[in-house]
Image (cartoon, rainbow, N blue to C red; front, side, top):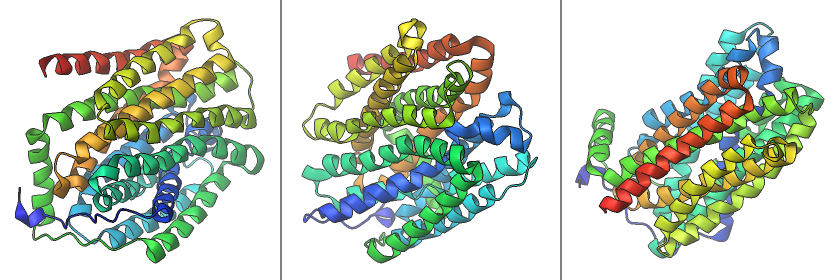
Length: 399
């Protein structure tokens, strides 16, 4: 281990319940920024002059920006004081949301740039989670990370119904302006309550970035978990980008009704704390196997007539969210355990791969649905976790 990148040992006192709750809220509020646009691209695109087949680029570029932020900004958590870094990125996110919310008609290309910037600047959530893991004692780490991930995943799931409701009644621009106001509150909360953490280091940023390659080469588990979750998240993003189009176009649902549909998916957030407890109890492999089996089965429901009803699609969303979240939390705990001194960089690599998968899933959603309908979405979506399952079984057999 490089002593120049070493960090102080975590406290054995643990985290207070109030601080865990605060971190969970902040994570959920910040990560919601990259999901607000997902169910309302059909409203945004026409005003901005984007075609229906290019509408999903709004979601895809936001996720791509998030992946870039994970790769370029999150590793700085192992280099500079964490609270200052998180506040700086949150300020950038607030400004980006204001720019998006004040975009004029026909400014599609400009808005896509803002979408990329919103994603890039919303990565402080992935600095908060390693900080919590660092502060929590070993015997509570899975539970703490699981609880905070529950807040993060609730933010992901609640962002969609919230943006649909607000857009339906007040217009889509209000979604982004309101999100900027939330970010301003988050900035104040972080400044007042977040503990300082100053990594003990002497490395340069260039050395830090070079160490990412070294970490990726050193830990096969990191590579494996990153690929599994990238495929799972690709299916997740494909589903949640395409399903509002199907609900509006083929089932005649309004934005408010789509909001209620998306709210049902939030039930899947219970997987995060459960996954953390399973991992703490030594059942990580069984939990991952369950998740990798459940995800394709959930998507294949859409190939049947009952599965393509509104209720059937809702059941798919709940099961898929549950599976994706369970596998993510289990993988995250295993990755954090590889090297405590490198958690910021390990998390950056893990989450970058996930959101690259998500960006790819979102990018193909509009053209795939336009060309092949929901059957095409279901088949491609199910194929991604099946591939992850095959790889997982092969690795398990070798082990």
